[in-house]
Image (cartoon, rainbow, N blue to C red; front, side, top):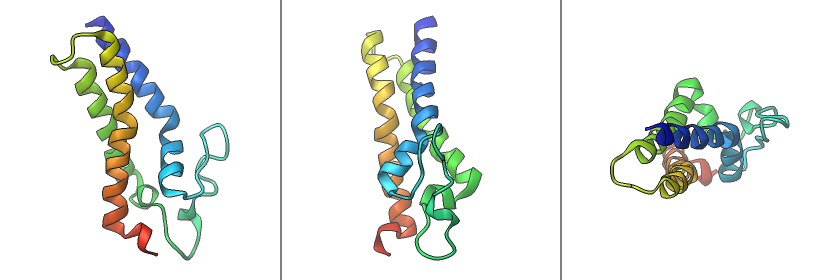
Amino acid sequence: MKWRALIFLAAATVTSVFFINLCATIFQCGCQSLWGAADRYCNIHAAHGRHCPWCETGALGQGVVYGSMLLAQGLIAFGPWVKSPWLRLVGALAAFPVTGLGLALLFGWFTQYWTH
């Protein structure tokens, strides 16, 4: 169980540090890394034009996106179906961009982000 917790902690740390980078890559919204300007240049701050779907949903929406990524990582890290710790780690790390991309496509489609 100790290894599973460490695997989840490692994957969750990567997600926490690079969450905003994934947002910037997918939506091209102006966000930068946490050690840069973070959301200072995000298009959510512009009076007109399209707004980043994740930022536009506020803390609740961002929490749903972030929480979904962590949930996917937790299921892989603690689930019974993968025996190898290395496969658990790779799977938990991969869950971040895979889940994020799926949610980004859903949020982008729902808000018609790419049709503007």
